[in-house]
Amino acid sequence: MSDRCENALLPEHLVQDAAAGRSLSRSRLTRRSFLAAAAASALPAMSRPAGAKARRVPFGGAIQIEYLDSDPAYSRAFLQHCDIILPMNELKFSSLRPTREDFNFAPADRLVDLALSNGKRSRGHTHVWWNALPDWLQSIGSAMEAERELVRHIETVMDRYRGRLESWDVVNEVIAHVPTRDEPLRDTYWLRTMGARHIPVAFEAAQRADPSARLILNDYDLEFSGDRYDARRAIALSLVRQLQDAGIRIDGVGIQAHLYADLKIDVEAVARFGADLKALGLSLIVTELDVIDWNIRGGPEEQDAAALVVVGDLLDGIFAAGPPDAVIAWGITDRYSWIPDVMPRRDGTPSRPLPLDADYRPKPWFDLIEARLSQGV
Ligand code: 9MR
Image (cartoon, rainbow, N blue to C red; front, side):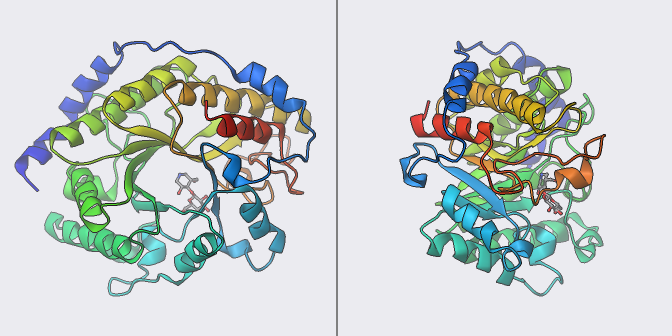
């Protein structure tokens, strides 16, 4: 890795770009969500388009291995509703690398095989993350040794799944939660040990290992209204530009879309973000869609109504710059989700984060997604 890359990702460059990001040209957009929502809610609750093939933009879901055997309806729901099925946790560093010597591919293999043997597609999540790191890795303090381990990891994993995982979240959540001028990037093991150059190093290794995979920078809180979100979007754009300036390929940005139902999506800013990325040759992909309804008062009807607005607004922003690579939910049914564990509803009633409810019935917002993905606009 050249010095150029190292310098190109110094924080001050990021911050300069972050400020410039706010004056980017505004793209025109139409607000379709309410019309589409009205049309969608006229559909009978159980009706689904004939199947995945009818969609112009693929829909996917992240699957958890722990429920495959205990709940047969679970995998059936993924097979019925998804074009893309990806392992939620089994391709993370700590799952694949319980020890330094060994790679534990069996659980990920099972999920990727489930997808591909049923004519579905799959993708990889994720190489570089601050979380899910084994202790043995975090005890490595030398930059050179950490880089060797990172590159070996990416090369081995992508080599194994070459041609089978169509895209990879090469880096996940590298932007600071609350970015500042001095600290635009998140304080992680990788940043502390290797500096910001772990980002170009990871993308370069990924490109070498599987040139056919689309390489994605994935992050959260890229869709709401407010300075913190503006800054996070600007830093994402800055990272893309800096990678490109250093001659390193990046194909898209993943908007995780863990959507707080009580926050306002900045539809125009998302549209502008998508347009700016498009101008750089990149696309958007929605990677971890679910709805956080902990602050929504009332019952299922109010929860689903709030979810419909926030999902509709997100789709308006995303589609304004053209169809995304895919829309992927972080699960499929309310029966299994991380949200009630981490952000339970204040009144103790069940959360409703996912496209299907706990009895596998589609929500109105899933009908809206179906409509938009089928139309492709
Ligand atoms: O939903 C995932 C949960 O099952 C895991 O225990 C956790 C730690 O590996 O990761 C969760 O998924 C996260 C994803 O990998 C990155 N974005 C935030 C997701 C929710 O925490």
